[in-house]
Amino acid sequence: MKHLVLLSVAIISILTNAIAQSTTTSIGNSVIVNPVGITKISDMNFGSIAVQLNLQGEVTLSPNSTRTQTGGISLPSFTNTVSAAIFRVTGDNNSTYSIDLPNSVKLTHVNGSRKMTASAFKSFPENLGQLNNGTQNLTLGATLNVKAGQLQGVYFSDNFDIKFLLIRCNTA
Image 1 (cartoon, rainbow, N blue to C red):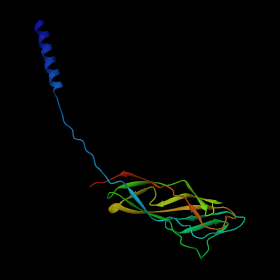
Image 2 (image 1 turned 135 degrees about the horizontal axis):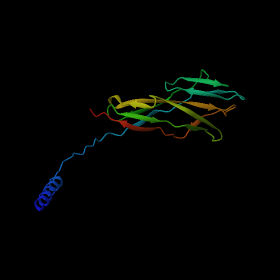
Image 3 (image 1 turned 90 degrees about the vertical axis):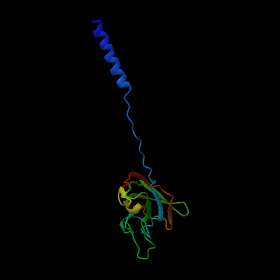
Image 4 (image 1 turned 180 degrees about the vertical axis):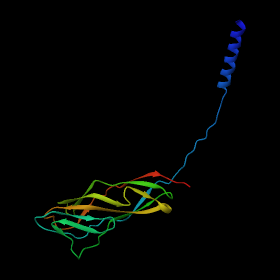
């Protein structure tokens, strides 16, 4: 019996030493990618809008720079430049990025007395973009809410944010 106990202790000791002496290796990996960059090419411009005194309306500017109106406004043929905003997005080739647009933006009359709201922003591409050859143009339109009797003159918005998030990068 004594020999059996000693043999058991010896086997446990050998197994414990064998387990304690087991080692393995691992390698850490990381890929550094260029962040997504954005440069403004042109601002959004809704063009000229004719407003009726007692009717409100909307001007919708699409990402391809076409516009439509609803309600008590019209779009004169002598309009100034109409343009969706255009941005150049850059980063690693084949990177995919998400687009987060603002909910609304205030436009203020040059004298500061009146405001309009741009909302329902739409972009092309929508939601996700792909950087083929490391670049892509993004165009942005919105809907401008025009009040009845809106004061004549030029309206400007403050700067507004468009957020981009790199969500995947193919490094092959």
